[in-house]
Image (tube, rainbow, N blue to C red; front, side, top):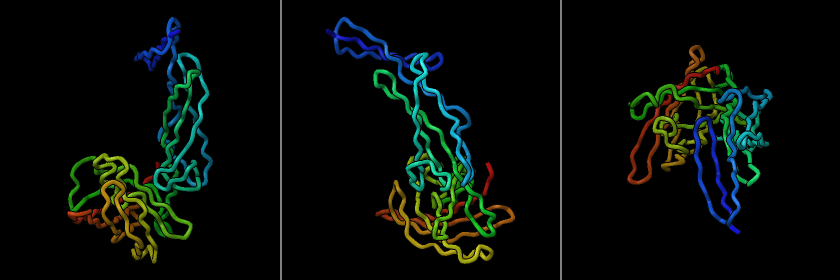
Length: 247
């Protein structure tokens, strides 16, 4: 006996079919899971608040099937969605049809806390970034988002010390320079230290945060970072103009 399985994807007016022959004289139609994410996307939630997931609907053909979801933090690598930790989380909804085929869809959940820039520099920021004095085009302007969070030891972390130059400006996935540490001496006089040496997750090399200035009145920060690439080495200076925003 051979069996013909016809797999159908239906999304609105889109129809795609594929066939796989593995047995004879018996045919079957299987509808792949199509998942619709409900509610807003991205979803913003302040640290400490309760996240109420808007959910998603999964269908195999016209039949609603159960979904599961999981969340993971992009920059701080939290393995669950933790509203006590500022980060950009990816919530993934998954569903499996009766034949074992799996579908998935995602929502971005942004957990943030905005400091007053007098006592705290944590926050949700847009960024306009330059490298060696140049900002090449619109993809480098008003990047959404760069995150600054407060660590348990009182220092601050930043999601990308290059201000999104590669990740958003060049649209290269997983190309941030994470792990930057900012230690406050006195915010009012722009006195900070920057322990540690960084590396770019995509290109390598070594990087160091050089300076940070804070203007509480305008909600703006300027962060500079110098990067020496892997051999043959070149040196680049990134200047991130950050503006704290409320979503």
